[in-house]
Image (cartoon, rainbow, N blue to C red):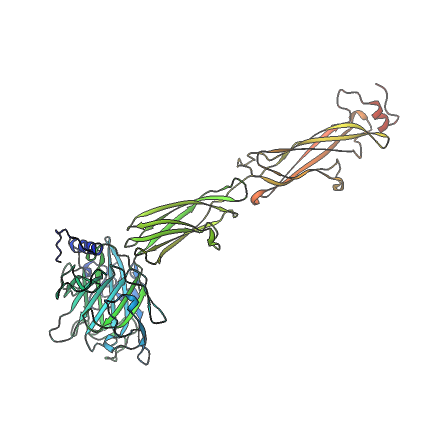
Length: 574
């Protein structure tokens, strides 16, 4: 099927094809080698040098540059016996899904043996740009390389299998540099599309199926620097060119040249692709594979490979835990929290969830999950809730998980922790006291006793104006009018005293002494002390109150019988 930017069409692979058409029909764009962000010039050396000039592999290798993602320089050098642990088992092809791939420890032909591979992603004017490259141990033979960008996480397992599967929209960039007479280099871009059963014809056009599971996006002699506006290109250090040979910024030893750390011609390959402009749609990739192939055909046998995580998508989470309160039963604290999730990466995020630990990181049974769903690039979503905790304050942590494809692994993640604002309370206690004297008979004598009474209150407000808090183990103790703690009497409690409530107490004691020999000025004093413990760890509070009771209140006649008993010979009839 030929594709025109003015056509309306339908296909079983509509989602993929729509993204492809969007890419093919976009307006003019600078070539990936002309963006000023990376040198695609057939060598790994930073020829210009110094920021803000373009990066090169040397820049990234030395820890500089401004990529959003960088695989590092992934070394795959064979051991002394010529073996490495990332060689395809024979018969594996790019048209197969990854459950049919297998790997082993072994060797590849020297021309197919990858020494190092690398990829770096950049964001430029809203576009996702990926630069990629590899170097090989021998330049004696054709170079057929492939660079896969998988949406799902892919891993080579110790048992020789691969963990992960293809997703529609996985991208493969083929870089072919045959050395036969009159052979022409070729750069080809395809996407995985499981609606393709076979090639549409012997010479498919962009947009058509090129093989089983493979849809063609781009095919041309796209040498970096040779044309303006190329959205994908590749280049090698050509024989007889300015980069024959060229220095290697990292350790390298060719089998065809005894000079260390130097790439002989056609030993170093690099390229770039504007994924947004060329592919369109989602640029959410998770894994990178560089591979060598026996030929340029899709039925070619795969040889050596290098695999590394390459998370182009990103998610950001921020949250805050606010001022809390105590719960209704005053058994724990309640804190409200809120947060925001932002897709700050290159592609759409799928199956996004937020897991909040409720302030208990060691216990995941009380975790709360928020289902965010799908987030397109630059989109945000909010979440909020409350936690109940015995800590004041707890630290509340939320983690966001997302997948690069619907139903994919939740490998894209971010975490944010915030200490909640502590709850403040001002526990208070107050006590009042009054007393009266009373005449009573005891052991055949008339004696004077003191009756006292009052209230203990859990007061509102306090000096700080903060709300009160419940008190427990509240007691009121009377000192019986002496400094001797041995005769102290608990006259109330222990009881619980909720906020804004009072409790009454009463008691009596017999004075052990008098303050004067003049009955008219005799009085008795005693002190009560109220103590309580605030719930939820807000401390202990205490207050005292003293009351003084005269034997003969003012303007009253002292009872003669009482005086005679207490002060013989000193009382007279009024």
